[in-house]
Structure formats: C-alpha cells, structure tokens
Length: 186
Image 1 (tube, rainbow, N blue to C red):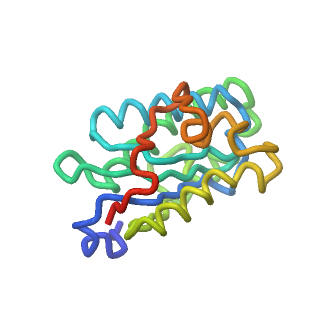
Image 2: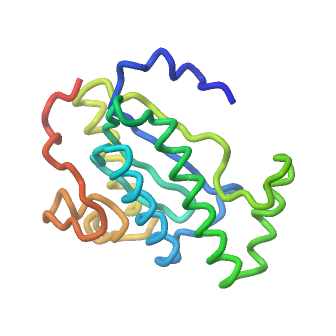
C-alpha cells in the first residue's frame, strides 16, 4: 500500500491523526472496547516512545495528536500496530457480546483475501502539525468533538478525551504531555 506522500514528511514528528471503524460503526460507546484501545495505545506508546498531546475516542473513530520519535517508529508503524492489535481484541469481545454485529466486520473483510474480519478502515488520515496555531486548532477540535456530538455538556466531562488532562490535570485514562500547549512546536 503506498504511503501517500509520507516520505516527504520524513522531518515531521507532530501529527494529527484520525482513524475510523469500518462503515462508521459505533462501537466505542462500550467502555470495555474503549479500554482495550487505551491498553493497546499504552503498550505501543512504550514500544515506540511517542508522546500523546491530545486525543478523543468517539463512538466510530478516534483522533489524536502525537509526537513521534523518528528513531523508534514512524506514524505508519504506530498506526499499523495499534489498529492491528486493537482489532483482534476488540473483535473478540464484540463476537462474545454482540455476535450479530460481527457480520459488519466479516462483510468488510471480503475485499481483503485471507482476512476474516476487518474492524478499521484501511487507511488513516494524518496531517503534519506545522505550528502552534495548527496544534491549538486541532486540539480544540478534538476536545469539542464530544460536546458537538451531544455526548457531553462540557469538554472535561467526556471520559475518553484529553480535555480533563488539560483542564484539571487528570491523567487517569491516558498520560498526556500537556506541556506543549502554547509552545511553538514547529
């Protein structure tokens, strides 16, 4: 699969990333599935030594801003592994809890020989963060997403978002590097 121009971003280490469940299926309204994704993110954060600067897990997708470490892994490495390993665990839980829903993921896999189930859309969307203004714009977008979707009244009330990390220093879900907010990261 081509890298869609990622080679020309080899000097970039800050990214805004979005990845989506096939057919925009709402699965992350189940806290158990969110917790699996969080667990996998933490594992690969340790392996690839990246910093999370902001995130939100919405019912059918997640957004985050990360700073990659070019010596330990690219954005493609990170997303490949997170999507692959979270899919296995998440689909196993869905199969036990809601066997009818598995049909969605079985159907989605038919275009991919040898694959029995497919949780994530094949690609993820990434944008290199070029400056402080872009960082703050994307961070605000991430934090306002649950409020705009009617999932929370205030940004800090949504559990699977870094808004609480920034508002109150609550790092109970994911450890976030809040030190870069307001600092030029270009």
